[in-house]
Length: 376
Image (tube, rainbow, N blue to C red):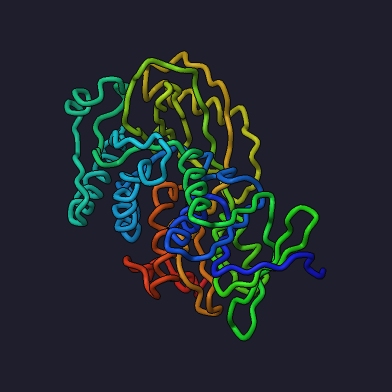
C-alpha cells in the first residue's frame, strides 16, 4: 500500500511500555528527533500492569549491574520528570518457608554482596522483629533496603510526557507493521495511524514491542526467541498502613506491595507460558487470596476490588535481549525482560540512547545480545 503520509526521524521507537518511553525520553533529552509508535495506549500492557517492584536483589548475575544502575536513576525520576511517580525505597523482603529456600537465599546473598549490593539475611527471630505483620509460616528472609516500589502506570506515562516536552512525537493506536531494510541497513518503518498508512524514514529502530517484538522482527528475517505469558495482579480495598516493603514468597507463589492510597496489590509468581490470553480464571484469584492470607494474616478477609492481567515477554534464559542485532545495522532490540523489566526500564532506555548518540553504552550490553541464542 502506498503511504498517505511520509515523515522522518533520527530514531523510531516501537512500543509504549516503560523501556520504549524511557528510550524516547533519554534520546529526546539529548536533542535527537524521536518518533514513538504504540499500537494501543502508553503503559497499556505489562509496564502498567505489574506489581510495581523496583528491585536489585534476586536477579540473574548478568542483570544485576543494570538493576543497580537503574535504581540510581529511579531515585531522581520524580523530580526529574516533574511527576510524583510514588517511588519509595521501602525495601524488599524475599521470604523462605523451608530450609532449602533459606539456603538458596544465603548463597544468593553472598553473591550479591560480592557484586556490591548490600543485602541482609534474617533468621526467624529477626524477621519477626523487623516485619511482625508477616505470617508465622516463614522461617527467614533476605532483605535489600535500597529496593523499592513505584506506581507503574504513572512512571511509564511520566517518561512519555517528559519525552514529549523534549520534542519526541508519540503516536498511540498507531501499530508499526514493517521495518524496511536496504543493503543490510534500516531505512524506514511502516505503520498505520488511523486510516493513514505512514512511512517514517529513519536510520535507527528500537524494537521495544514486548511479546509482539518477534512479529515485527520477522518482517526483516530476524527471529527473536520471545514467548508471551500472563501476569495477574489483584487489588484489595484500602487498608490502614500495614507494610512499606515489597514482599514475595516463591514458596507460596505470591508477592505484594501496599500502594500509597492503602490498597494492597497482590500478584502471582507462577506465570503461565505461551499465551496472550488475559482472562483471569477464578482458580488464580483463589490462589492469590490464599497466598496473601498466609503471607499477611491481617489481609485474611480482604476483598479484591479488581483484577487485571498483562502480557509479559519471556526469553529461554529469562534475561532480556537488549542491544544491536548483528544482521541489520541500525536495528536495536529491547525485549524479553521476562517479568522483571519494570525496574530496568530507565537504565535500558538510557543505555540505548548512549549507544545511538555516543556509539557505545556506559554499561556493557554484551550479555544481552541476541546472538547468545544462535544455537537454538
